[in-house]
Image (cartoon, rainbow, N blue to C red; front, side, top):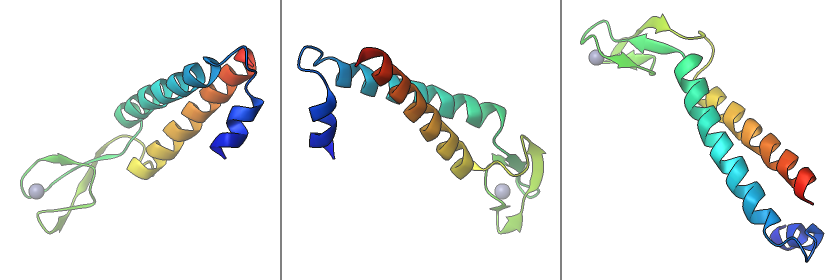
Length: 96
Ligand SMILES: [Zn+2]
């Protein structure tokens, strides 16, 4: 797979794979932080009062606090991965 990617990069643009990898990784990381902060569901423990992303804390179901109710960390990770990949692809199209 990696060898196949290297073959499509023109020899006069060896920096392209580095730039698009860094851009995709950076943007994916930023997207993960933003989506986590803005959309991810946060719960509060009814026993100890701590904020948690878990549905159970202190062996007791937590209560909804904020965020989109069905957006958990897994969904945030998928969104961030897709966003990073999209940026990486866009950069590759522009550079290659
Ligand atoms: Zn607790």
